[in-house]
Length: 401
Ligand code: ARG
Image 1 (cartoon, rainbow, N blue to C red):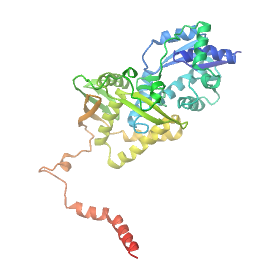
Image 2 (image 1 turned 45 degrees about the vertical axis):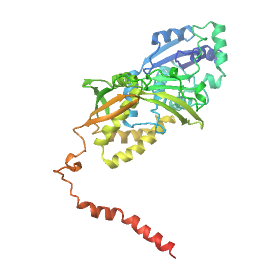
Image 3 (image 1 turned 60 degrees about the vertical axis):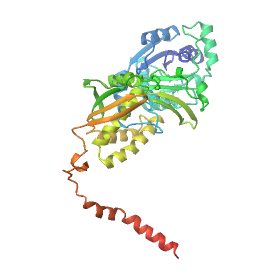
């Protein structure tokens, strides 16, 4: 029986050419698998037909947009995950869900190998292959761009020579990856890190310099998950989409960073994640009133480690699973409403309310009715400073010798 290879297919030039390229290099049959993670653009049926037109023996489309929102974006929100303090893990969280569907397709179609279109310099090759090793330890991996010398020029020449049903002329100078959680743009002009991004780079966000009138929005959460916007019930996917639209119109969620890739390279990336950044901001502010101080401080550390693990391709690892359990436990009381104003590139919280809040007006107030006994503070401060005071006494004694 001819060997079969499942290819992660985007519909773009590289993966379209990869279908025939892999076939010629290995003699295997190629099954193209496209996964919908809310990236928009062309219809999936168009993409499916193109894969068949490029020589795939089967082309399979998985609608994973709700699954992606529920099982990948929501955990990222609960963790307030921002890699290096900036990046909401847009591409990093899409790879594990794509892997899941690739492995499923490999089983269904009897494939022995999984292929992806990543280069040998980035994080995504790691995320795909570590994910595949974990979910399908018997499966082999191949990356035609990295392993079969499929360069951009060769891809264009191949497509023209074979008359593949794909555009080869429209040369986009940027490498773009997008899904419902956000959009990532790199390469070309952006590789000079002093160059400011030009307007044409953005798609999910409008220029914040000329914002429309401020947009006030109320987001309701239940156990850390958005369940309503302005009182209208929403699914996680709908919440992200609605805020992509409204926060995007205000230019919220533009991010320009130089980040540390797992392979040791620093690289410049432009992100736009209006819905994700608005949600993370609102969610964090709700946590501020519903999570106890020590738990909150520790959770910030856990969230950072969680972001690093996910960035580094360890989505399916035991440590990530353990951190998920901790984060999930912290979300028990993260229920309530956050009101925020979206305007001029910012999402600013201006009101919060929750039945499970720890904010105690009677303790906090400086007005009459204050229930806080200020006489307790003196003794507390005395003991709180004791250890450092003893040490400082020692320092003076030693210095004086
Ligand atoms: N640097 C980001 C990450 O590793 C995005 C990778 C994909 N970016 C792109 N523009 N193709 O998660």
